[in-house]
Image 1 (cartoon, rainbow, N blue to C red):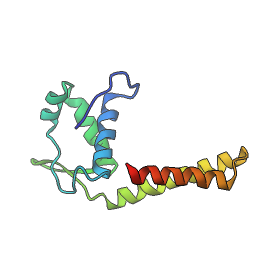
Image 2 (cartoon, helix red, strand yellow; image 1 turned 45 degrees about the horizontal axis):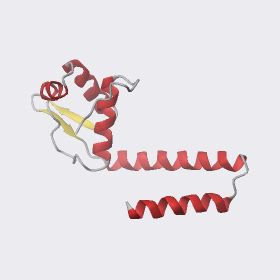
Image 3 (tube, one colour; image 1 turned 90 degrees about the vertical axis):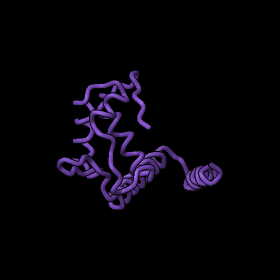
Image 4 (cartoon, rainbow, N blue to C red; image 1 turned 30 degrees about the horizontal axis):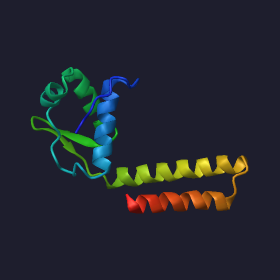
Amino acid sequence: MILIDYKDTRPIYEQVAERFKVLILKGALQAGEQMPSVRNLAMELSINPNTIQKAYTELEREGFIYTVKGRGNFIAGTEKLLEEKKKNCLDEILKRIREVMEYGVTGEEILSVVQQAVCAGAEG
């Protein structure tokens, strides 16, 4: 479920947090579901529990999880987070479209690329 890439320049806690974000946003982890305990996940990944705690703190700060004293960490409702992520992605696409148009790419070329992406997504 969580893999650490030791060649990645990002800190391990960021990699752990990012992987959980992806799993939550894609629906692999559902709202209300309990997260693995800090100790168990640290043992499973062979890393310091403080690293997992730091990842969980980041996830909680960003609204992906919440803590129940004495019970652990749980997945928060993700509808708002998912909508925000979609909006950010679409904003980034729009920014890139404007950028490539400045370099002379035509609307037809952009539509062709979008169509290819949509078709490839439908096949996958």
